[in-house]
Length: 126
Image 1 (cartoon, one colour):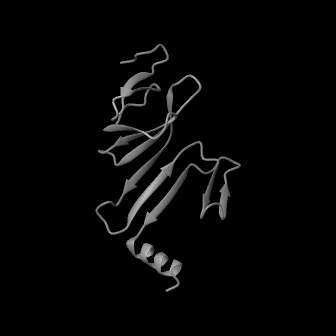
Image 2 (tube, rainbow, N blue to C red; image 1 turned 45 degrees about the vertical axis):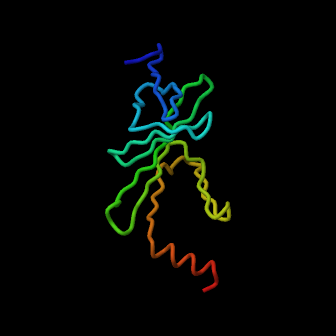
């Protein structure tokens, strides 16, 4: 059910504060406020988090999501998806990948305890 003519609805965050979400963006398991302009819409059942940004009209709009998989496996995976990816950078901007032709909409990342320990050892000079 819509609360506004544009189809947006009011939803409550875990803080008790109400926010206006764009039409079609349903509230997940819970809504977290990161700032006045950024919300995380957490969906426990689908193991995903929507990234939601406030526009000029005060409506929070979907910008992308982070999805987790392999959570029961040793090596976890996460995927970041957004049609608004301008660029990706690594190591405090040492390596940057631009998206000038709008071809990049998904970034896949695999996490590993073994890789973490290897990196820690390298950084410590071991």
